[in-house]
Amino acid sequence: MSFKSILLASLLLTLSACVVPPLPSQPAIPGSRLSGLSASTLLNELSRVAALSPEQRRRELAALDNERRLDDAKRFQQAALLEREDSVDAFERSLKSLAMIDDVDPRAHTLLDLMKKSLSARIELRQQTARAQELQDKLDQIKALEKTLQQRNTLPKSP
Image (cartoon, rainbow, N blue to C red; front, side, top):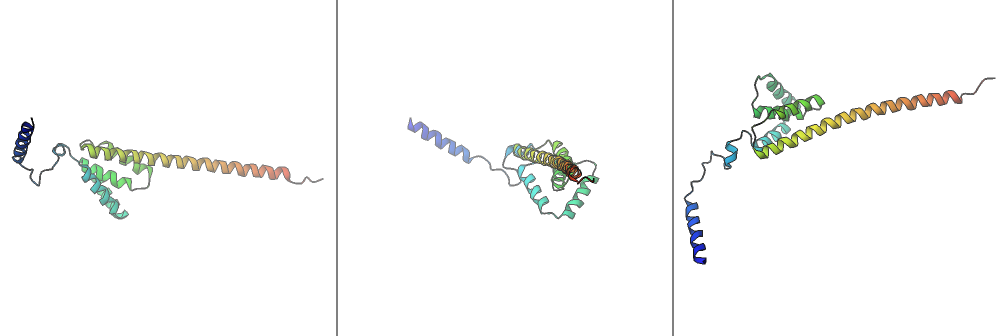
């Protein structure tokens, strides 16, 4: 029985030596040939956008806004640029750009989902902060009104 297993192992090793290795220009993962964007491409784009100055980001975003049709890579670039802006409108536009991307591999899809969750959380945080500030302003107005009413009641009465 051990002779059969040794024979089988040597046969498999011999057959595996006959396999032609992929060319350097071909991706090593067969599934990535079927999908448009890979996780490494998206991560490289995020790091590139993070290294840009605010003026460079604005110029690139303006160039992307002027294009009529965006492919998935440019949509992701636009979303990454908008994510760096500091407004709820930019976050919402970034979410819309990410929602239109459909041709990605599974790892890249996970990255897109994380970005969407992050943007949604940032939008919600901004809305909650604005609501908290609004409530704090109302509370300050109520305290000021209460203080004036107390001062009005404690004024000495003239005879």
